[in-house]
Length: 194
Image (tube, rainbow, N blue to C red; front, top):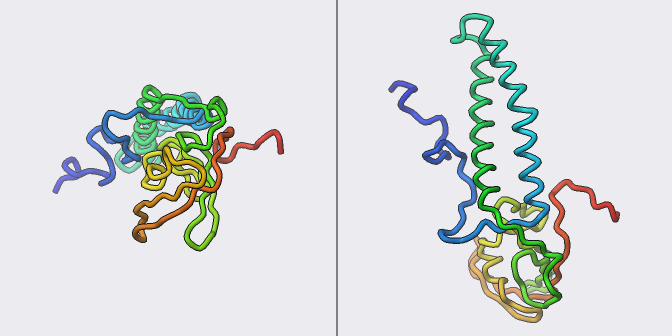
């Protein structure tokens, strides 16, 4: 079959965008100020630095003649498509973003978007999670998407409540130990207070 009739990747949608965590239909794209800043910084970097550099390399490679066997040209065009795809994705996500600042929330023991929650499992082991936007999710750092099963179970619960949720290992029950609302810095950001 001709390469023209095949897809480069199976995890792309109709617009050629990489599959990302989808938002539930009819919901808003909630995001913390730190997450919004990170997405804007990435978009700015792609538009102002990376894309112009790749365009320059592709133009140089194209001027060298035969493009069919020119690795710089072929790789550059592929990289340019990836950058443009990411720019479209980031632009769409930022256009529909609704920034929610956890620091602006009144003190409460109830869990909402932006909460930092300490939970204890059946064995008494404690875990700390921050409920963030779908584009900020990083389980290794305890950041879970507000659309995840755990976050959905925690939302609207209060300190002392026990909640059940479906995990990959089956049904689990946890207790909400502590709820707080604090600044959530982007991953890799340095807290000036430290």
